[in-house]
Image (cartoon, rainbow, N blue to C red; front, side, top):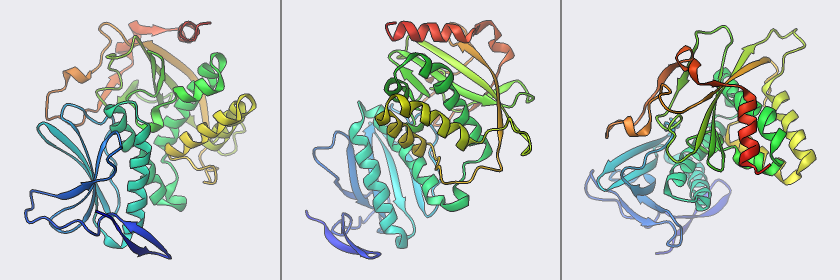
Length: 341
């Protein structure tokens, strides 16, 4: 079945929903496959109210590795009816059909690159988070201070560890956090989860997924915790997120311009726009702690979560993790080994 042209804004665009019938039952949807050659099962669909949907089918038992974002004028939900689970994007305001179409196209295209279905699920969720930031627009699109702090934590892993040992291309490729992967960094079978916290805060960090500290599928997992504190505007030591992101970008670009382009794309997926004004948010980056997650390290793993529980968030006491502290040099040495140096 071919699609028909619909005028959205000033352009005529193929409307993939125009020939999809509205179902009779509220418990069903009608749809057709987006692309028979796509490695994942994506469908254009309509529900009983005639609303436009994008649906991704995948085997039950797989779960997104991060929570789903709340979209304005759209819904994004997960449903499970054994043996199939679904991610469903639903347009609730018809006047935003063009934006919704662009979002859906972007998600479908991005997931063509996935190595397997789990990675495709995480890419789809990560890309939707990116669209959430884009749809906010203007000053409302600034990352919150908490998100700035978390992104700075990841960027400092790149600068202080990865770029000292890996090629620029390998360092950037290792950064998986913006794509919604379970771990922030993956280098072969070594993974790093990054966290940032205020130096004077209670000695806890927030773990937002049962998969962040799960060691299944990796040989070695490190938890890197960086102190990041707010800084008075007049303190010349302070750096904004823009300062840090651009500085690291220049380091990457001097080694490999193509890697810098990939790095900038990942920054975009993380919600960072170099044109946004972060001048009122200077930060001081301090020391870091590095833990090797192994044996009885205190954590909740994916295998601990009972069926039906979709989201796990918990506070991890750093004091309880002290037996697993390792020098940052240990992480660096392991990276050297991983890189064959």
